[in-house]
Each structure stands twice: as C-alpha cells, then as structure tokens.
Image 1 (tube, helix red, strand yellow):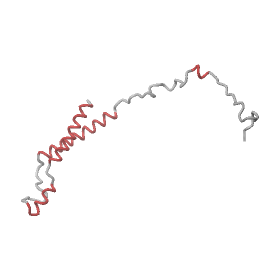
Image 2 (cartoon, rainbow, N blue to C red):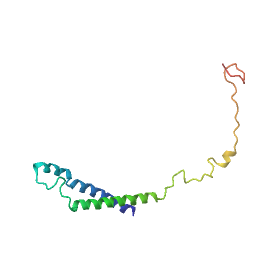
Image 3 (tube, rainbow, N blue to C red):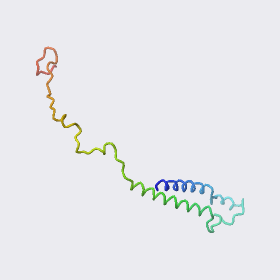
Image 4 (cartoon, rainbow, N blue to C red):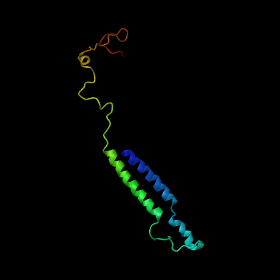
Length: 122
C-alpha cells in the first residue's frame, strides 16, 4: 500500500511541476497592456479557470493528500530491532564463571636501581 502511495506521490509531483511550467504567466500580459499587444485587461482574462489551472489544482491536491498519507505510514511503522536492542539488559556482559574469578593485584617490586620498595624515586 505504501509503495502505491509513493508512486502516486511522485507522479503528482512531476505532473504539478510540468503543468506549472506549461502555464502562461500573468506577468507576460503586462507588456501587451502597454501598447505592444491587444490585451483586454492588465492581468489577462479572469474568467473561469482553464484546463491547465484546474489540472494543476488537482495534482497539487493529490500531492498534498499523498504527503499526509506517507506521514501517517511513517508514524505507524514498527520500529526495527537493532543489534543492541535484541539483547536483554538482564544478561551479564561477562560470563558468570569469569565474574567469580578474583585476580589479585600485586604491587610492582623494584623500580629504580638502589631504591627501597616503598619509596618513590626523585
């Protein structure tokens, strides 16, 4: 279902881009209003919308609705379990028998030549 919405979304986006680029802008009639053409008004005809503007509105509406649909799909998607999340926190990081082994810490004997065991060389 999500793949179908993605396909419709991309088609609506490309259709909107194409229709907007094909439309004749209102600013193009500005030069015609000042003597170079025979335009009826400054901003062109303001009658009912033609085919291109209606199709652009439809594609924009479809794009908006598919955007909302994709947002819904992404917010209700199950989260993938990562490597660290698949292990329980109750399991120890080291094996149980290794944690029981006690390694004694032996102070280093010797040091600088001729020094006593407890002295710090200067």
